[in-house]
Image (spheres, rainbow over the protein chains, first blue to last red):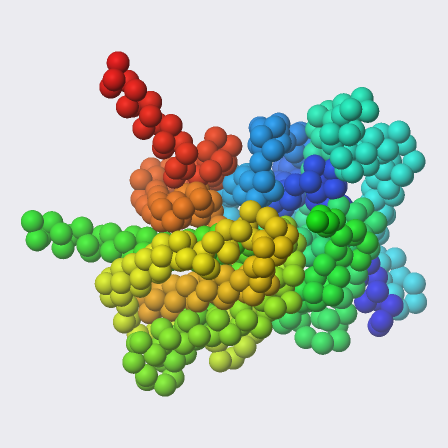
Length: 293
Length: 289
């Protein structure tokens, strides 16, 4: 029983982690809380659904295209909304509110186009059978979610830690100005980051759409709340932190439903968040950046 | 004339009530912002005030003033309790923590029996008259205007501009921050109490993340550099939907777009004294020529 719950926790946690990864990437590199991430997540789910329904292409190709589309949208948001604010050196409240505007637009337009009711991928999009090991069941969806999430996370981690590009991104995270003086093309990397973050968000959207079978225009908002909790748990802007924070949140939620009560599942995330902020405001891995007088 | 007014009132009274309530909420967040606190807990405090007032009215039969007192007192108590640890955080972290607090409040209200769970409370007596709102809004605005020029207001401003410098000048930063937080909670709570006794029914969904964001939006849209900004912002955003009914399903999208445009092109909000001064000077000089 406990082992089965662990599998469920791992699945849920890796989706949270994947979603939070894009969120934290933007905060780490651009220094912006991008509140449109939830809406982009939702859109990823719909794009894959449309492609599978209307063009009968395979789910994996649809997922890839959805990631590309979301990434492009992320770049557009960066170009039209975040970049002008960056140029002006606006206080961090400004991008937060502007991206809320973006989220409202995307959600409302999606509702107008797709309707407000829940939709799902056609049955048989992904094999329904499950692998049984003793009493444990691992469905194909769960397996796919865990594998895809972890490979994307690993890819990002290697990229950030082991490549020249990752080094440049980390330099920008420290100080965009210094990075610029070192000859790094800061604007281009901002676009790239926005693309990667939104693509990861879109991927998370497709996976959630697959596993919960409830794609709706409003699925982004609760996920955004979870994402906020995760990146604070893990330390804002920290990639390992987002991964561990996501897994931890998934674990806490699944265990609370299994052994306590399902009523307070949604309170777990924010109760945890609240506690962490009081004890360790910078999260599990974050550094406190405080100005010394 | 009177007939025209009756018709107008019948159609638009809800908009007018909404404008008043929203104005109070915008002032509540203006107050915390004026002390440099980016707190997004105001929707939760509004909810606590609304529930406290409604429960007094529905279960004790005490008169309306007592209900309103409760709607000020309960949020103040909660703000005091959570403010002490939370206000050590600053900037984005405070915003996130207060959002978290709001979510915790929502889930608790959703699961308690005395708050009616997901159904909320229904059949709250309709006691709020338009002049209640006008009076309390007037008092709030007047008090805040006076406060700006008082020792407290100057302390808030000093903290907002530079916390460390303020501390070095002998301002008790922690205490003033707590004061701003509690006062903001009181204003939001009263707005909640008034609103609950007008709308007749309240539920946990009325005080969530979206509402916190709406309140912030009204203040930032209007501009937070002076008192008129939040008032103008809440008025505009409360009335605007009435003029956009032609857009039907895409009304919210238009709202989002307006929000983006204001943030991009009017960073100080629509009510920006510096820009108004420039405008006046320009008009004046053209007259001279």
